[in-house]
Image 1 (cartoon, rainbow, N blue to C red):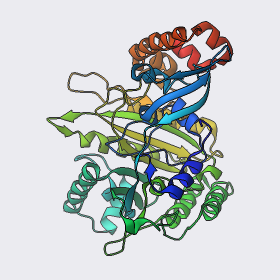
Image 2: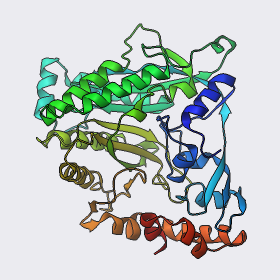
Image 3: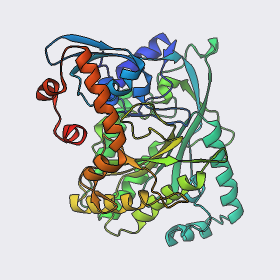
Length: 433
């Protein structure tokens, strides 16, 4: 059913231990209807979006009739359509046989997690940390090669940096086939927190730290970062991997549903040059995020900078569509952050992430994650809603309207009837008006 949550699905996967999804969003308290309607994604360069996995959608239309969509071309619109068909009641998603995640998350100096591109103006405070830790240029180059190896070889990729911390958290892992010896694996990878109740308690603790408004803003961020790193596993050489079903590995940081935050995410195209990914572009985007955080003394980003890597998408309105690879990069803060400071910071970051061009001077088509905080900004001097309509999704909106109208007319209704009953102000205006 479309109302099935990730946690309900996770429990089903563990009980039967035969089937799972190859990727998913990491959060548990969301439904499949919600993550598909807004075209959410997981992590891994071999992955796309959850909407790309959809094989059939069943919905109630504007006349109250039950309808189905299973045609592959129609699904390119229907699987990520923001509710513009009607009330989605069920979604059929392509699963695969259960595999095993061999997880080795680690904490390393921020300059070694995703090293800066050559010549990048590293913030002075990080330069000082490099000197204190005796990190050499050779160390940075070796770390760059290790980072690329992780990107190329591992199934899952994510990186977190909590503002003002010396270390970043690196969570990339491989998967392998399930064997009979894996039949008794626990629900949660064993690193201290063993069940969802403990995960909820951890999330509640993070929420409490995030409310320490008696601390100066930068110390709020620092305290939250310390608490977060203390709760995350740090596996060193010689220690065994955290072994889990892939359905557990994708969701092992439960409890985040108890932590409220503001977040903004952008999907940045990553080109393949002479058959190789442009890793320098990924490094630049990551370090532009770090530099933006250090440039603002009022500490408007008090939770995290995060990045995942994915592939492209065939879904018409997916931000990843048309990309060979995608850097999904996000900033978070606590809701006690003054809204005007948060908006100014988001604009600063967006100015950097939308400034990248190819050799001809053409801007890359960076696009926001639909479900995050983007609609009040500007891109290249225009209101972002105008940019989305006239530039970022101009052709995609045209294609979507055509397929959407075709789906409805084949099933005995119209766009006008459907919008009267199921419209959403922002997306309806952008797509149809």
